[in-house]
Amino acid sequence: MSKLLASTVERLEKAEETTALTLFIQDELCQHVERLLDYVAEHRKQVRATVMAADVFANPTAHEEYQPE
Image 1: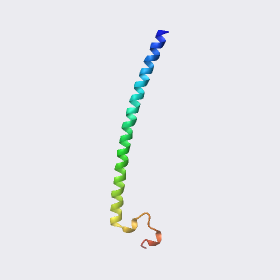
Image 2: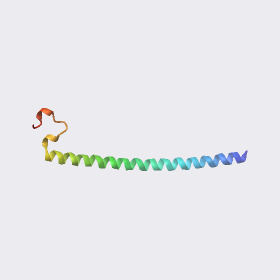
Image 3: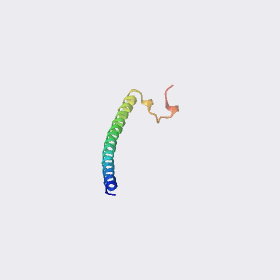
Image 4: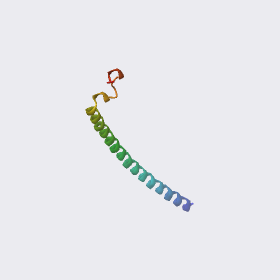
């Protein structure tokens, strides 16, 4: 019985280590995704500003009837 108990404790410890590592990796990935989303949002703002500076009618919210022929 003690071998079974020792084996179970060992497996539980390994599972705890794996869970802790998984949570750490998940946290790291979330931070990277947040930074990537911030980068994409900033890049989109810059692109939008560049397009608007080149063509004021490039506004995606502008109605078709106001666009030049």
